[in-house]
Image (cartoon, rainbow, N blue to C red; front, top):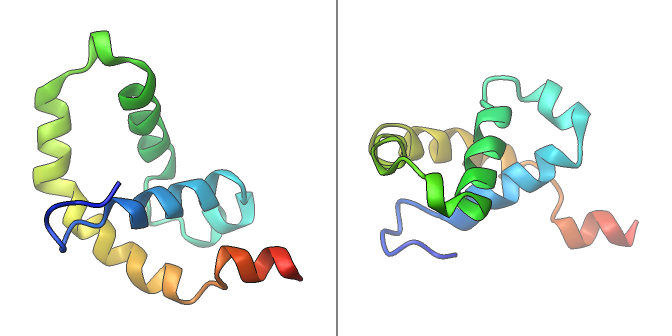
Amino acid sequence: MKSADPGLDFELLIDAANRARNSPSFVQDVDSVPWLDIAHMRDRIAHGYECLNVAVIWETVRDDLKPLIATLEPILAALPAPDAAEAD
């Protein structure tokens, strides 16, 4: 899911959250990121349409998304690409 705003790359966030879910050591190494909160919000958006609080989603986008992406960009840049890791 590519954002209309190039400063908000939702694919980057989803990639990081997916890697985190599959790697407990990654989560421990990068403990400054609220992985559990990200996973819960993703699950609520994906599966809980009837009970979404739009105000909470808007606050998250407005206040938390840009700083989170800024934190994740260098972390992900330092990791091998998912395809490269699978080839090993």
